[in-house]
Image: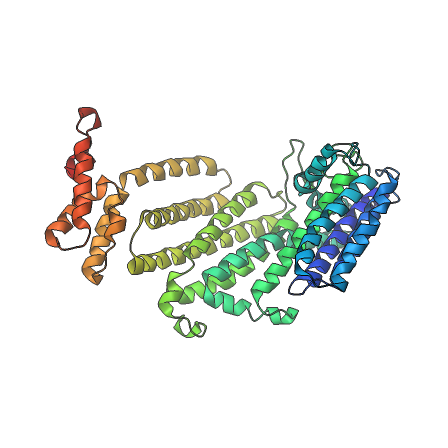
Length: 498
């Protein structure tokens, strides 16, 4: 295989060094008071910075300092950094973070000639804000593009080495999503969280929340540091370089990014592994066997009612993953295709279990706290997602089936159906039914519903005229109905309310 160009090696190493920088930062600052760690942080950043800008080869221009004033800034930067090791004034410890950030940004911009404006003009500092707080976000995909581009080069070399790299890339791509998904699932299920809390001991952290927090912190720092330095490197050329091979592996001529099947398979298997663990807990819960698995101090009813919002969010994420798996994975041999289809099917089956669990949790929640518009709409949305998942399973194994047509048709039908379900009337009926069973009803909330709820409340008034607030609600609906006396305003709801 042809060795990468020198500038390509530098790009790759910049990604690795940025990741190391992020890991170092989470170790230095999380759960510890800044002291000597601030000096190490600043030194590590400058190590990354000077590696990127000094000794440019090929695609890198020859690095030159712009002004002697940029070098002079090392004096205040160094002195302010040392204050964290010398003093303990809390006010200055907070202020110095912002001052150090501003000084370091100013110095790095001056050293790399990233701004043509004089440093003593107001416009220069407006441009600093743009370069440091806005522009880096336009390059968040660059490090991932470099990784995938490197993977494409590896495909031309040793097959085993290339396959190993694809697996690593798949795991790296899955890591950010796994952090989000595991956080949501842990919030949704106390048993799942208790199981996860046994894992962090291997990493010398107290809980899974801390482990996830450290990972997010390090990832954000690493990504920002890389993207900011990338802004400085390619500011003059608008962030593009002929020598920077940022085209993703598998990208078609039309710019459609296609993931390698090995990378995609690793990604999907990583996600499914977490889902299968979670789903096994849900089966125990759904079939009534979770009573003995609950953490200490957690009641079964409390466990059953929590987490439906998080489960719905995860289900939506899974539908998005499904669409990516159907249209953004490059087709390969029969074996790879079978892995892809089985992985996507497993993803959908796990999603269906999550939706069933969320639906039952929400039902118990409504029995305990009453029925509202939001809760009934969430019920409908979960049923809608379930239908989409069932259609998706058919599409996974039937390539010529048009998923877009089916989804559009189902979406329109679902929206029309929700309009005709008369939600407010159902809310009133359900809450009245709950009142007859428990003796609890929230008339304040029911009085905020539309006139669709009036007939049910009128019937309740005849049965229980002593209920506090029911006479006011009835009077308000009748007044509202009478105010729409013109024939152009007539509707069945108004007529019933009268």
